[in-house]
Length: 125
Image (cartoon, rainbow, N blue to C red; front, side):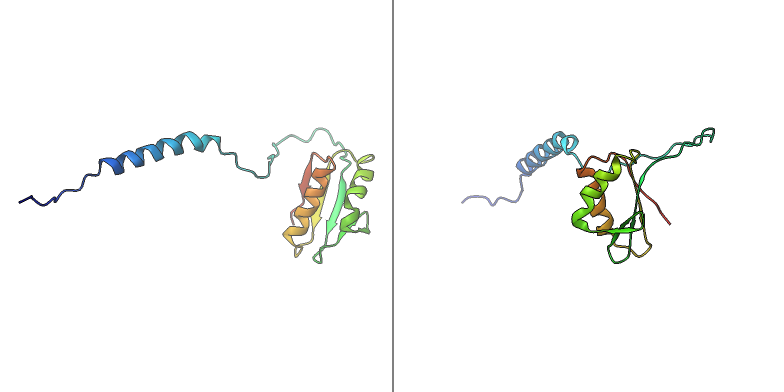
């Protein structure tokens, strides 16, 4: 008669785990995470008072956009920003109302980036 087999061979399982570990170690540094590039301002002594010429947009709680007190439709944002960039080259300043939606601010940032605005700031309250 044949004897019963009572031991489990875990060598193949260990080999599989080691191969997976090596694959993850090689792939992990290559993964590029998408996100917002944030620049933290440095503490600077106030010696010069340069006036910045920024495009100031107000985002209301209803998702409306205001530039210089005039309402701008979502479809007209790109032309309004492009026209204003000629006189205000220092970037875009978004002033959201406290109850404004995050999506409306993100749409404005996306439109600004698509027309070539390199500096976007959001004013907190």
